[in-house]
Image (tube, rainbow, N blue to C red; front, side, top):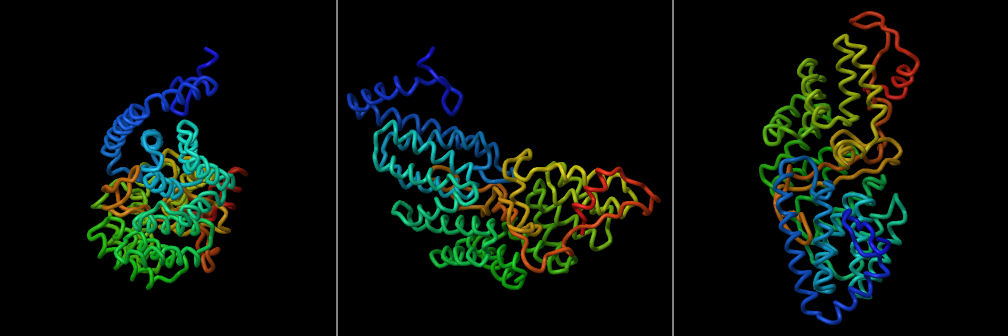
Length: 426
């Protein structure tokens, strides 16, 4: 039918020319019924969201990184805004912080639902807000950062929301290579809430990216106090020791993290590299195999496994891993944004040109839905692929040798030689 089109969820929907006057008539003719219906629908989507949270509990990543959860969450937000455009504004802002923390594309989905609610309710304050946010999101690189600055500059966030916004702001700055500014944002979060584990995690990861390892460990101590026994604290402490050149101290922490969350590929990748440094190549290969099995586009682990395979005489396998790594696209793998979780754990890439989709998350007391607090699957995600910082140049790149090795000379075709040249393994 010409007056029916498909909406953002794929469902049939009246064309705007027909739909707008129908909704306006219903809203004005029976405002109490309008509000009650949207409240019930919001409750329905809330129950669906909570059920999905149970399904994905224990999976890597935060809920906003899961498309199915995100679709339900934005429908819940839409109906909350329709039921009470002003009453739902704090929940709307809180959801915006989480969306911006994920990435610009996710933030656009959030801004779109606010625009839909503004159109369907006729609420001018929502219209002005959505217009400002969508204009800021026109810039793919800095859009999410700009929206966070809008959120922080206006009323609507409580203290907990401002803490989350400052941490998300620090994360986005980290991705842009503005590390000292990121420290300032996380510092503001900790100033508002000294017991906030996200703030200490952000400070730890950023100091570590700058090579300030002792300061990073002090912030991990503070994070441990705020989230005792958290898997992510053990993992990040182990990774920090690994980067300090102390793999024998890293392993017990990485073993502890793995015991708490066996399906975390970042822990397995870091542990595999630590074992390889200690000369335990076979064990390293097993860890890296499991990490890549959990996350097929785990580029960092592919390059490290190539080095391990080459050391074991499997030059063909090393070259295959390098070619496979060359074909990976950050953030486009089986799990949206997973490539973005690599940098805090394994070091940010050169140039600061690559952006990511990730954020840290403690095991409890974390915002998971539309203005909700709840437990976390897997603790905070480490920061994503950030800038390559001074002091992490050629020595940080993996190396693989094509030709003579334990298995003898193994010439590679030109395409693979180019892959090796482009991705020297440390």
